[in-house]
Image 1 (cartoon, rainbow, N blue to C red):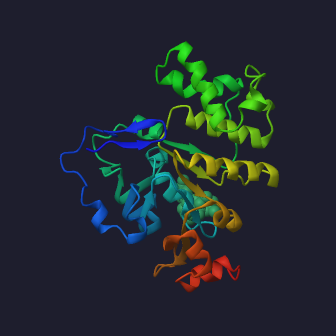
Image 2 (image 1 turned 90 degrees about the horizontal axis):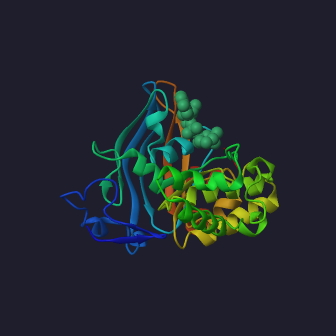
Image 3 (image 1 turned 90 degrees about the vertical axis):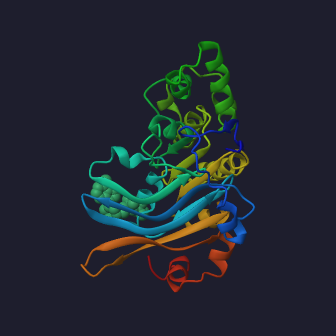
Amino acid sequence: MPEARSGTATVAPVLTRPPAEQHDGTREVLPPELGERQIVFDLSDVEVRYHGVTAVQNVDLRIAAREITAFIGPSGCGKTTVLRTLNRMHDITPGAEVRGRITYHGEDLYGPRVDVAEVRRRIGMVFQKPNPFPKSIHDNVAYGPRINGHKRGDIGDRVEHALQRAALWDEVKDKLRQSALGLSGGQQQRLCIARALAVEPDVVLMDEPCSALDPIATARIEDLMQELKSDYTLVIVTHNMQQAARASDRTAFFTAEVDDAGRRVGHLVEFDATEHLFTQPSDPRTEGYITGRFG
Ligand SMILES: Nc1ncnc2c1ncn2[C@@H]1O[C@H](COP(=O)(O)OP(=O)(O)OP(=O)(O)O)[C@@H](O)[C@H]1O
Ligand SMILES: [Mg+2]
């Protein structure tokens, strides 16, 4: 398998032993606009059910390396559900079942020999509400490296580096032993990003990371995303269309429609370069949503 650089980590082989059959044909089947980029996730015909009921289906999506991909769409259309397929969070969601195929750097993410702990290390997640542990600032960031068996001396460097990358170091360097719960909401969210970065992931998934923050804290997180995308692949869910338009490179618009049985089922309507999707949407449902006519 060719070595692929991403962030500070060298990503090869990834989740299991290198697969015998490699996706070297990937590039040929990519749409031209993604052809020059490495594909991190490739979703084909993905469907997620909860307790046997389909929540979202027919999702075909390719997520490129070192870009920001945004998921937008009305409440209940399946944005969070699809995001959580990308690091196998549904393994721990009662009643959830993921169908279809998702590859990560060409490997089947749901393959039988995949190490799920390694999936979660490589593909980190930041949630809507900042959720620092009730521990010190230092211990929040050191948590992952400690679990991964890093030595004490090494951990201090990792904590500093992750806090630097999350643009929080200058604000906390003199109070690393204080409780993380004493930080502001925006600082707590950057701490959660630092915690995710401390284990040297390849991808960071963010589910509405700014929705609990004020505009200034939101702007800081958006700036941070722009800095991080040179080294990481970011996938964000946002309700804020201005944020998607400002911050992302590619946007996926989902919606939910009522099926024959009268159930609301989410699906992907349109996926395109953000600028294109917001200026020349090809589907009238996308246009209706982004112009605020419905959703
Ligand atoms: N754990 C769960 N168990 C059962 N049903 C769920 C679960 N999580 C989500 N659903 C259902 O799946 C559908 C999609 O939900 P999801 O949370 O992915 O939507 P969303 O687009 O993220 O919405 P929002 O913008 O409100 O966060 C909804 O009908 C929701 O009720
Ligand atoms: Mg959601």
